[in-house]
Picture 1 (cartoon, rainbow, N blue to C red):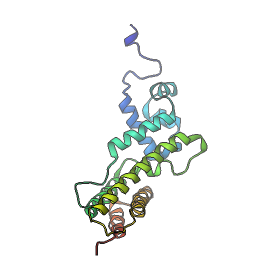
Picture 2 (tube, rainbow, N blue to C red):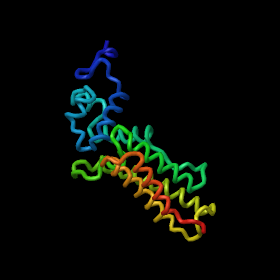
Picture 3 (cartoon, helix red, strand yellow):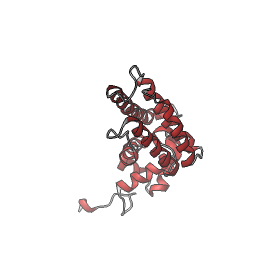
Picture 4 (cartoon, helix red, strand yellow):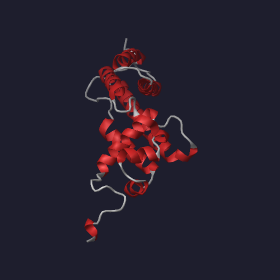
Length: 198
């Protein structure tokens, strides 16, 4: 019966969610290009044809891994807290998670910092996620200005970009070996970029 026939090259215990999580870990640790097809095959236990059948292509697998990463690891500024506290919590969480995650740092910030022209689709996937993160921070800054939590005339665009740059820098430093304490110190210092109401 065709419905129970196992596809060639796919282990009997194949679970797409497990395979995707395994691929995500590889992309997070090694970046898009460092996670070679051979590395992905070895980690997932799937042959190249089985990977392609399940996920389409390496770029499509990466796009799905990016979405999975955001679903499982992504976080935003808490809109239930005062702005400064929300930023402090946001940066503190980044300090903890970037130093202890499977791949260290943020997959979105560091997974595609440099890549070949052949990986344009994958590079675009993480660029879009970085832009979404920036939009989230920008919107929260605009709300804080409107609610009087920031001084009148605050350049919320520049403030949002500064906070996004801090997060991205924390990710790179985590990849370079910075621990939670060091990243937490950076997070606390970064709060100084938030203008005071005086």
